[in-house]
Length: 541
Image 1 (cartoon, rainbow, N blue to C red):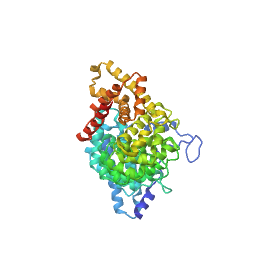
Image 2 (image 1 turned 45 degrees about the vertical axis):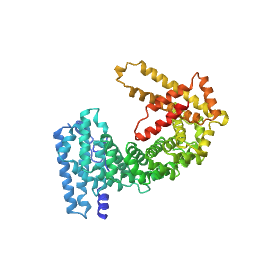
Image 3 (image 1 turned 90 degrees about the horizontal axis):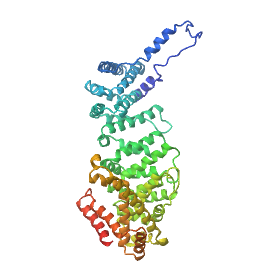
Image 4 (image 1 turned 90 degrees about the vertical axis):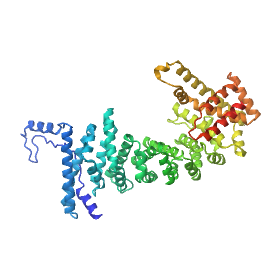
């Protein structure tokens, strides 16, 4: 360790731009002649800014030069292991060669040749170099080479990038990147600015790899301890750009992988994310970047709440209580807390029961009635619509998860109090979403389907996106209210339908379409159960 540290200190030098030239005015001292020929300066400047042709010949020359400097550095370190000054120059030359390889990012078409020249293993092995500066050089090089912006919308370049990424993965780039990540210091007073930047570049490289090859999202979690590092990073109280990026990478890893969601759950990840979110239960983020990080954390939480076992962990960790507290505090995370509760209570009765037990109904129905905290963010119309849709989904989940007993009575009583104002609000939403869906349906019917090549399933999905799904959930809630056989609620629903020149058949039609389109994603038994429930509503109306 002492040797490694000494070598780092010895060979770590201030990096300057090789193109920087000190031009002194005529008559200056320091041995510079006032009669210096300006044409020489012009020629020098032109030579420094000359553009090198990037072709196979250039690539071979760059790789050969790099391999030569690498060999010299290895030999110097082996020959003088305890004399850092004796291999410092070879290390600086190796740094310069790695820097020159960055030019290859401008020619993705050469990536297959770079792979065939067998340069990838040599480059990647340097991620374990004793001098972390060299490892950082490699990280920066990989970030540049894997940057999706290099593709220039050329399909051939997409294929070239995949060839490069496949070679990197085959040569253990994921393991080496994460191992190097663990030895970089980017938090606390001892944080090194260069190493902080290298951490950011490492995360950027991993994101690039996933973008080019999506299966990397699961591979990196199977083969490395990246998830452990990310969870540790978001636990740090102080905010910085690396904590923000760590939250974003964690969200990317979780968003499309059930395996990763379960892995993080088994690592106590639900509790870790809840602790990170809890820092904002009574305060708002100070900057837009910090606000984005908080949104990333809630994205992580919602993804984690997909598997059933993580919903259980969420309830045990008092996640329901925390989300209600956040809602009551009316800070910027208000809407995100509702979203998390919606995920937690979907098809999970214990979360619904806990929500009622800890007096969440009052807070939820205040949001349902439109009493939401106002800020620059939620003044946006789309934000308010998303909040409405989440609240409707949450209430539908409550009805689906609480089927009997005192909790059910407390839920139903909310629609009777204050002269059935909740039913009035429900019918207001019913009419608004019904009008929106009708407008979209008319628009789709008026289009030439041959031109759009749109089948019935695609039309149905378009209607779902325009608000049909929320309309269906409203109809389901009306079904629960109607089947309660409460005379006051039934009378109110009948009255409001009549005022809008509608009949119960209109609600039945929406329920019937919902019934007919229930899929079997959760298995045939679950499909039959769900359809049976909707059929009862249809029969009762």
